Length: 241
Image (cartoon, rainbow, N blue to C red; front, side, top):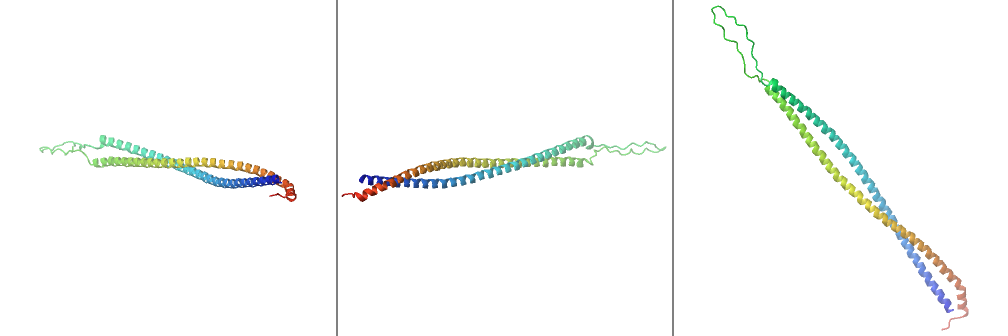
């Protein structure tokens, strides 16, 4: 009888311990599943951030390429215009130098016929002073063309500086976005590692809990099987003190 009671008490303690182990495993499984859901949400959020940042970088790159292409076209037009004006200035300057700056004009001589007994008249006037009536105007045109060239060059220089500033800003923004993407991808990788560990833990603890459930069933069956015999001893053979 004493052995029967001792065996049943041991089985009961084992059943209680096994049941508690099952409860602990269940709690751990629940906690891990909750953490998995949290990690999944965080991974999805960061993955969305990566997609948005990559799209932002793509749009910024396309915009910068368009701006640069427009600048290149404008720069070519400005340089072509400067060349045309420069060529015109050189042609005009050469022409004026060779043909227009110093003109000397002399009047034609009339045949001299003197009257008998009269003194000859004075010679007709001639002018040999430099002819400069158009000189200032001609020089002014060349000066205007020179100023136009200078203005075009100023536009070329300013436009180039603006394009370089835009490129510098783009490269800074591009580097920042690429760093952000890299950091997000690193974080996602770490989160996925944590999630994988939790999923493995859930799988392992679920298997352990199933094993404990089987053990508890065996113990409970043993207790159930021992009850008739132990009850018989308890009734017919009271324990003596």
